[in-house]
Length: 502
Image 1 (tube, rainbow, N blue to C red):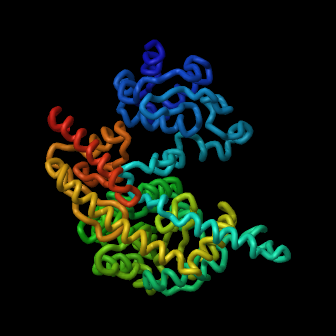
Image 2 (image 1 turned 120 degrees about the vertical axis):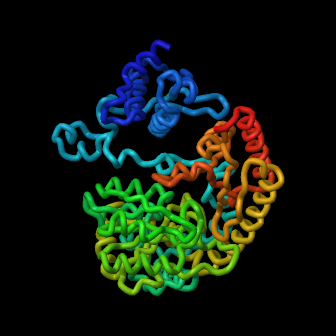
Image 3 (image 1 turned 45 degrees about the horizontal axis):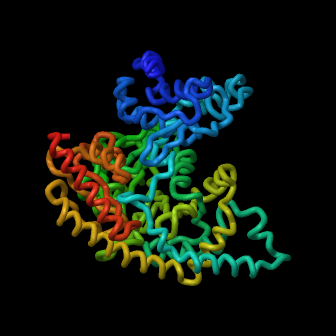
């Protein structure tokens, strides 16, 4: 209690530094000074927040940071403890992992200090999320054809000519392995109607890598960026880190409201959209809105980032052609990923770029990471060339459709008193509307304490009022897992009902 009283006195609610950063620093100080000993159990985040007089989210953010850096160790069902093997780190008052000489020189230290925008990445990007019900946007990795993948890898190694192995074992092309770019060009032409050549494709370490590099290349500090609201937190983080100003543009049943974007920021330099399936609400951008968006971009000299993250898993009808397919002026950058088609650990994505931007992106890619691992690129290329990607996607599409149907039936039979859910035509998750008086954030928090992962739409909103909506993923979970999760949710709702409105 003496420690908690000290922490509470040190929390400055009028300081520029966010409360979670202040709490993080003080806890590091106490741990490194030995006041909190290795193996010592901390109060729960709820108790911690109550004792300090701060929100629970503040404590969660501080704990997440401490866990990621190795100061704390969570133990399922037991609590959070000071790690027994503490990291070797600079004193807490110095910015983490910054060379003191650089700090003293006064150059990079200002841009990398703990309270700058680049350190405030959302927790969904900073930490590994758990593949537990009902995590959204997570493929059924247990159904991936691992043996087939291993066989391809073995064949690839066996076929390497020792005299010509340098292409895969030496340095790679910053633009990406050419056979993979050829395979991607063929794939997006057939599946999404894109007209491009391998020259227009650049390989990245996932779509977020491409989004971030686009913000660095295309934006200068102070320029404005249209971002969907609610929408993908990665674009808000990358735009802010680039010094740009995100503009929250609302979405409705037809997707991003272009007129509202023009009213708020007619001179925006960039617009980020997910037209094939808006993230997180799931609607398609209407054809009329697509034309309006392109018309604005052409007139304003703006760029459009098209994130096409899971269109391969379509269960009803055919999707519209990609926005890129309608672009006649070279304003659209199309981003895709293998994280959903194959598996997240692969960390491979790609961009289809206008001719005018290819050289700038390849040059930047040579600086930021240089190139993605060549053997993984070669494996994906072989997987696509041999037809395995198309086969795998078809198989997963059937499986996900079955799992979605099962989840919808379970919700209707066991949870209809507290929520209603509608099927999605595309993707790996459904949106559920909670009954009056229930809060999505409160439900997600209670679910997390019971070992579930539910995404409240409000966590992805800036101004939109969507606390009555939650996301439930189904793709990675079998019937037994979903049944168990539904049972836990029912218990949570019954408990909340007894407490009154949340």
